[in-house]
Length: 104
Image (cartoon, rainbow, N blue to C red):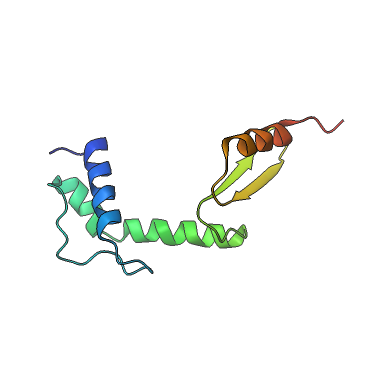
């Protein structure tokens, strides 16, 4: 198997199937798909945990404490809106309308 979307989603699926929760990860004996050496080097390195920690710090700074959370940012006006929890389609469309509306 080669790197790419198939390996990524197969790996993610196995992680979700075998996770112990509460940050404990998966048992060490959990089989993962055949991974290329570059993919294996990446997941065996400190890079993934460093990325997660960096994202967790940023979330804490922004006051984000729920999963999922969506942050909408209008780069033209600087307006931002944070939506915590699962958002229904209509609510998301309303939020997009709100953040993109002119303040006249």
